[in-house]
Length: 373
Ligand SMILES: Cc1cc2nc3c(=O)[nH]c(=O)nc-3n(C[C@H](O)[C@H](O)[C@H](O)COP(=O)(O)OP(=O)(O)OC[C@H]3O[C@@H](n4cnc5c(N)ncnc54)[C@H](O)[C@@H]3O)c2cc1C
Image 1: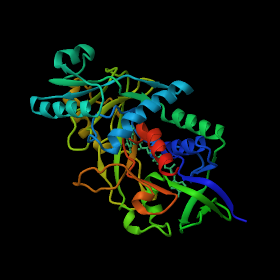
Image 2 (image 1 turned 30 degrees about the vertical axis):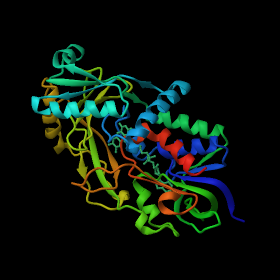
Image 3 (image 1 turned 180 degrees about the horizontal axis):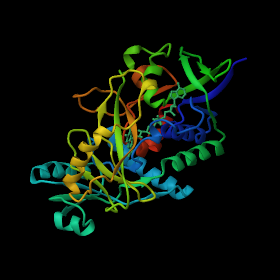
Image 4 (image 1 turned 180 degrees about the vertical axis):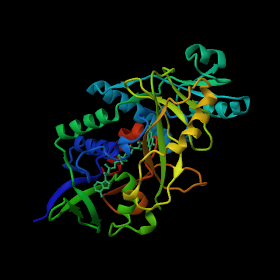
């Protein structure tokens, strides 16, 4: 006989774990199935670990709303579970007068999004961060950093405490949906494989979400966006960080620029840059950081840190953004596609969960739980 559960969440990244936790806490029997041998090995382990304040996203968008709400939920989760984090704040800086309108537009948007910011003069910014060059700055006190793996461990602990389970090395191959019956899900566990029935299915497969949804029987293929992948590389700074706050250049289009972030240990790193990949298969992605990108990094960093010494940048790591738009087209919103969008009862697809997905994870989970109530 095929096992039947209330809810299957596909993907044990930060979003899948947050969704599993929310559904288990709502009283459902939940399994989070993760293809890898451990949770959090995907996009959730290759990012900046910044708790975004919610400055950048169009007012009224899901990104703006879920980032602001997710930030509150994330900080509360960190405090409850002792997850290492720091509200270090961030400075968004203009490095010449031509960038002041962009900074002002960001300040206006932050206000409209309900995010506190202060306009700082160059002198105020330099008093706080003497190594900084800027002509004006925006101070965002609610931005922070978090240990993403400790956060995921806390979400998994909550999920399990509420009776849910994580199934590792369990790759969902496909699922079939038909009105009036549970989804039939096929799982590859490295052995004979198995099938299970689930009344609700949440596709939180990150880089694989679109490819997986394209295999769902009973879902109109027109409901599945074309995936695109954009790599971001990081360089680490050897030695002590000259900054105690995060430093971001004024944004250009939808890209935040080569910024300086800090990890919990205070180590500085720069990035990510943006490189569109010519692949439609995330399995073939090369995560190596190309040393040839170093010169471009140094040039971008010296605009706000002219004192960057030669030879102190070291290739660190890279991550890949699960995009649902291609180069040159505007960044779309998160897609949280439930029955109202695609008409399939019990199914939620999460598409395009790029930044600020780490910050927003627990708020996305709240929204998914409402959709599947
Ligand atoms: C370079 C970069 C920097 C970023 N910086 C930030 C930041 O500073 N702050 C912020 O808020 N956000 C940031 N983000 C975004 C954030 O990292 C992501 O939005 C978030 O981690 C997405 O989590 P996820 O759970 O959706 O995906 P993932 O972590 O990728 O999880 C998906 C999981 O699904 C599993 N899986 C895939 N297919 C299957 C299958 N068929 N069956 C079972 N399991 C499967 C994968 O193994 C993976 O573990 C950044 C992203 C990138 C790329």
